[in-house]
Image 1 (cartoon, rainbow, N blue to C red):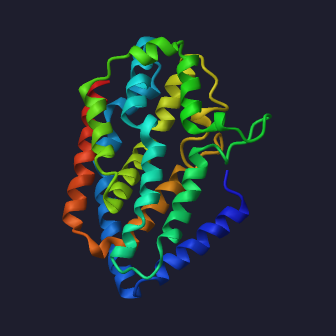
Image 2: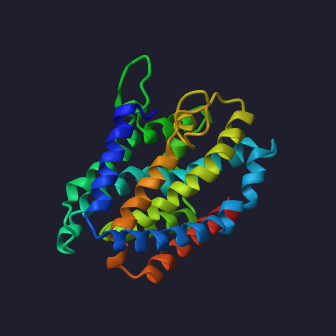
Length: 267
């Protein structure tokens, strides 16, 4: 959960970002970002039939296991890697002659990375790497009776692998990577609550662990902040949007959404 100091840190960083380029550029970029966000919000992905199916008590345990194994491959296993790559690739801003140095963008990404590594979720054992989101997801697999052997030997589908590769291939492109991560956060926000409900329907406790730290700050049953993370990514995109083709970025975002739709149909 974000404490007051982290809110101040975010506010200060956003102020530095917005003041590092002319106000007219920031406002113009912001308008274009808002248009793209509005278009994506209406995308069929976020109204996918699987959302209703997950919310209903109609998914068998084997299907739930399958979904989690595929989800692990498509996004969970590489999400932190992608954030770290975005932080590293912020150095590209220097080459674009944006006044603010990469450490400001890296700092904002660092807040999200710290959350991924579990710094915002302290248990009775205190802070521990075992509270990283990936480790918490692995714990869910165990609760679903998915052994490490089953996990290791699962043959991933083309659909989940396509999603993984699409994100991995953006690792060397700062703004494209930010964009795909923003879409991924939108996907997490849309699907975490239904997945949590499906897991609860299977008799698994979700009052802590992976589904306790995913969702939005408006959900008082979690300590999730994916809405903050998504907003951070869009702010970073706003910061350098004028250096990129908006239409190309729109295409990347829509292609990634479509891959998620195909993945959902397969599941």
